[in-house]
Length: 255
Ligand code: T3D
Picture 1 (tube, rainbow, N blue to C red):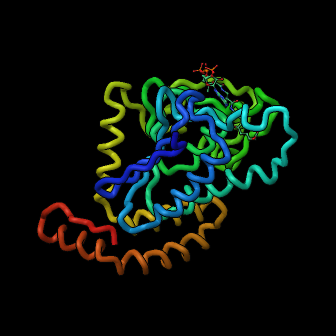
Picture 2: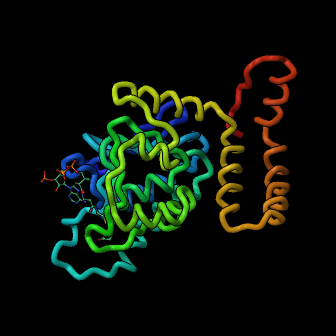
């Protein structure tokens, strides 16, 4: 069975973690496939990526059976996670995590590394790591405090309680919560909307926001001017302005 399913249509690449019997617990094979798929997603025909899970949940984190009884090198093993997290963060187009059911451990870390998180009303999020005596990894210590602040991040990481979708929404961990019955349609609608957008500009926005995490105001003003030089020369910028003059919706081509 393929551990990662890829489906592409109308500019939307859907990557489905596919080990439903273990709530899509991540194996080395799966991480390598995911990292490769994210590299391939740089192709211009892909304008948005959706990351989801098969079966009854998003992802239960590292497969706890993969290395059972072995003494592994975490340093080596975590390189596989690093490649995926950098792939998600560095991809210059929007990545949506479509979370239904459980998102636990490194499964939550991957969701946090995406640009948007849409949760089904049945979603349950937990950091999970401390329950098995590990510290959160796969970028969770970068993304989580930036989303919820130090105090809440500490609480979530140390207590590893399970958050319901609405609680995650209130904390700003997910962007929106959708009733389970209409979840797939809403994910498709949002992905479709983004796939019609000015992709290059979205990529530049992503770059700017990511850079801002470690930059001063002065540096950001400088960087924004640099990126605007690029955005201002896109065909989509011309089209956006033209559409404004002509009082019609823009037809962005993603370049
Ligand atoms: O160690 C390293 O490599 C370093 C990196 C670590 C990164 C990490 O992600 S550490 C954290 C790992 N994840 C967890 O600790 C979460 C473990 N799972 C759970 O807490 C729960 O399963 C869930 C909250 C995700 C879902 O609960 P529930 O009640 O809906 O499902 P369940 O019955 O617990 O699980 C269903 C099946 O999936 C079950 O298999 P079975 O008994 O039917 O054959 C369960 O064992 C399996 N499963 C769930 N999570 C994992 C898993 N199998 C392997 N690895 C898992 N992480």
